Image 1 (cartoon, one colour):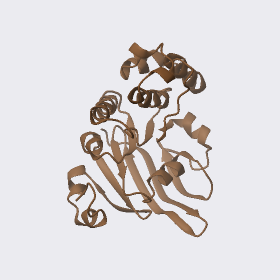
Image 2 (cartoon, rainbow, N blue to C red):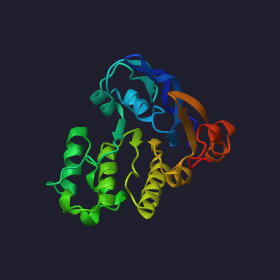
Image 3 (cartoon, rainbow, N blue to C red):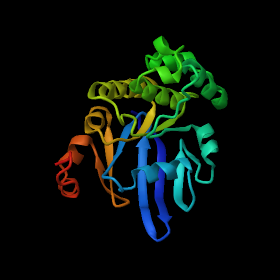
Image 4 (cartoon, rainbow, N blue to C red):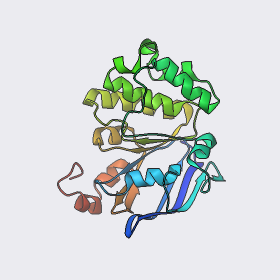
Length: 237
């Protein structure tokens, strides 16, 4: 992880009518860093991801990607600028073979690194199977492969371990760590699985009621009295 800031957001704010879902959130992620974005349900995690990627309306704040202001860019333009995202639910086509799905995404990204991605995520052995015939754990890795197509600068992952077994979750974490280490990939990850968070993240940002509660290295965050108070009875306690 270098000292270069790859993703910097200041003043991120979003309202839904009279409800403030995100209030003046600042976030900075360095090149090669895996940053965890955590908090209870309703804390603003997915809303923050939406704002960063340009989804929805009533968005306020400034977002800089690799030194370039992308605040006014559309979701597709941000993807072309180097920001990719995966979602909580799998987003693959059941009738298409895994290789075909990755190739289709590569065509849209205008960078064909299909074989490299399939190999990186150990999907080459099932590349010729249709999406409907692979396990749920493999489908989650396909989602990750689709996000990695085009060699993005920053990868935003929204609960990539959702629905996975403990073993599958840790395998996913190892893949992420390996990708980040070898390619200086910058990752912002929302995840409820604390085993994944504490095994893969360099730093954490904790959201609470739409605001940043605290941030820092995983063990420091875990023992922070404010975090313990906010999540009394949860996995933090």
